[in-house]
Every structure is written in structure tokens, then in C-alpha cells.
Image (cartoon, rainbow, N blue to C red; front, side, top):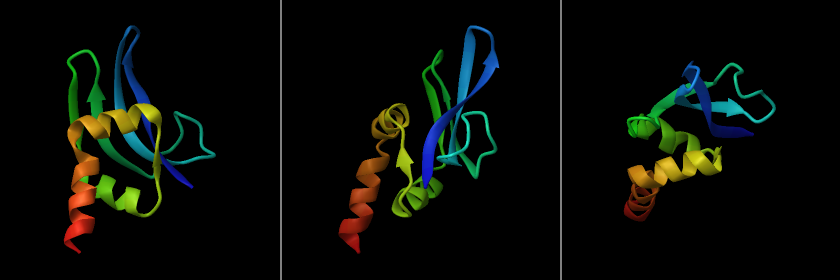
Length: 87
């Protein structure tokens, strides 16, 4: 099973995160299947590869709670709904 989760980068007290697709059994800092986004909580910046994220979600990937909040704020779930309605 694949999860979309955050992988921590940055210096002490200055975290930045990459949103990655990773196997459930892997540890947080383990090798990612694919990096699909970037999140900087200090500047509140988000950069997402939306087509890849939608592909992973359609294949059954489960986002963690924090990643699902980030995706919800970016409107990714609405894009999935509109794609499935159009087909």
C-alpha cells in the first residue's frame, strides 16, 4: 500500500517538507517512490505536481492527515471530483 506523506528537510528549527509517495512499511526518511510536492510551513508555500498526485490517489494511495489538509487547501480533491464527473 502506498501513502502520501511528508519527508522533513531543512535545518534545526527551520523545517521544510517534501510530499512523497512511499510504501507504508518504509520509515519516514526512507526512499520515496516519487516526490510529488513541496511544503514550506514558515512561508506557507506549497508546490504540487497535481497530475501525479491524482494518479496516485486513483491507484489507491492514502494521504496522511496533514497531507490531506494540504491537498484540500490546494483544491486537489475538487479536481478529482470534476474529472470523475466528466467521464
